[in-house]
Image (cartoon, rainbow, N blue to C red):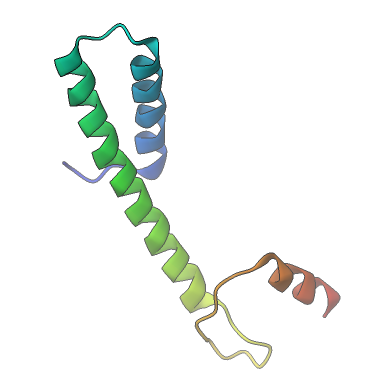
Length: 82
């Protein structure tokens, strides 16, 4: 499977879910698009994990030094009060 952009994968997943919810596909077709959905969801998860890693690496402490730090909503409050 060629690299698929996150937004494209999510759009296709929405279509797949809609088709599966209709419940009017033959079993073999349902399985086929279900498998496609699983591949797309794994791809999306990988993209999100990579993005999270980038954010962690780019967060800087108050001294301007880069440090690995998982973002929390409290970080935003801390920056606003500084």
